Length: 306
Image (cartoon, rainbow, N blue to C red; front, top):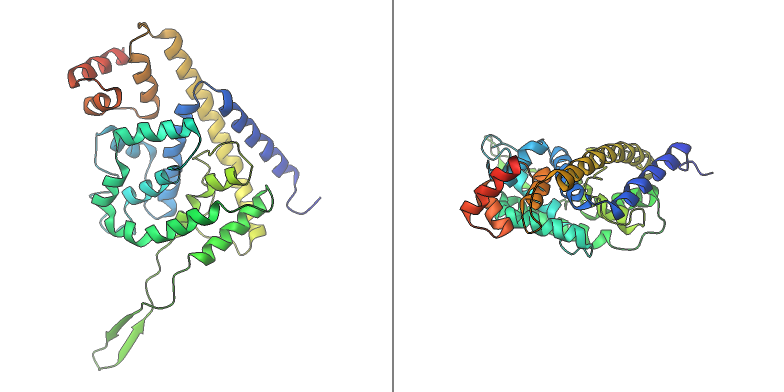
């Protein structure tokens, strides 16, 4: 047995298989993936230095508030809207029909691209080239289907996206001396972390991308082997949280199917399912989602609240 093949790792992989397997047949897979996308975005925002919670994202998506930290976070290193956009764009070319459907639903409520342009255009310009580099690299074949191979790819991406040594700032001191200051480094590990769920899928460890599996720490350990151990602990924690959330979602979804008094053509059950992922949807968003009039949207919201 190699050093990184431990009983704890084996149990973690079994748990991962359990979660991944349940998502192949669960009637609530779409709701889970929608909520997992928000959990992953929250984790990325924390790594990027702009900590938020899921409720703040849900309020933004539902149309109840502007992007989190849009007004009070004037000194933030990056806009939350830009972090959210990069997290969402990871799945733009997915072939998973369920993941694609949840992305289309989200973007029919909130246009993350327009929001990022409004609140974080400078961040898009700075991190966009890095993100394209990361996207190209993560889809290259992996040598093995294990966490060590993913850890090695992470270190390769860190080196690949390292800022150049040039482009410093030249200033002149009071006494006339010229000083060349190095450029201010901007954290980019969160950008690589955004690709972790896709890396797990591309390495063959999951059958579909699970957006909540954002596993990187804020500061990387000194070696890929050490990072693989960190990833294993983070993966185990994320899987336990995912299984708990899936259990709760399936119970809520079952209550909607069995307890909602509605005709077959009624859109109340569909709206109730959407509200599990995006509570607090406003009439304007519901009208856009379900292609109904604003008055019809208000009636649906009243019916679903009952």
